[in-house]
Image 1 (spheres, rainbow, N blue to C red):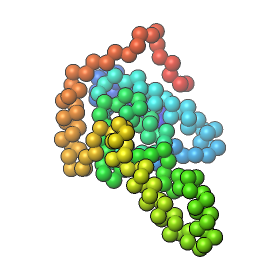
Image 2 (cartoon, rainbow, N blue to C red):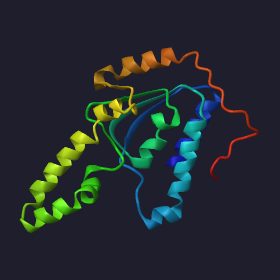
Image 3 (spheres, rainbow, N blue to C red):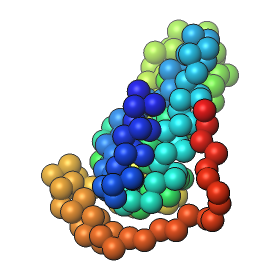
Image 4 (cartoon, rainbow, N blue to C red):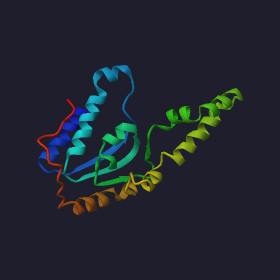
Length: 181
């Protein structure tokens, strides 16, 4: 999927077609089979395509945006022009289930001894979502320009496209890029 998306991004950039990216990505699928299949190499192609594109790039995070897969999907980290997120969006390094198992390993072990593992997991998951994986925290850190309600998506995208209609971006002079092959 990353290779197809990279080709599409490069196609749009070739013909000066603005990119609107709707993000709902729980992350890259981990595993040795995926690694042997070249998931990192193919993800790098999409990252490179977005980073190299000079057309207007608008992103709407509609649900999950985790880890490196989020960064690849036209995030602020790779010079997207406008990034919006819905109030229900979750933006973080990793999903709450995996994160709490790492961050709160000792607390979970103690809760398991006391027979309250399910309650403690629920409490810690809620805490993680409120503290780290919410769009308001991402907006505070500058990863999202605005948290918007779904019904104003069209309006914000039109405003963004109008604001970027005269966008001229010059990449550094070089003979050619170094696309990950």
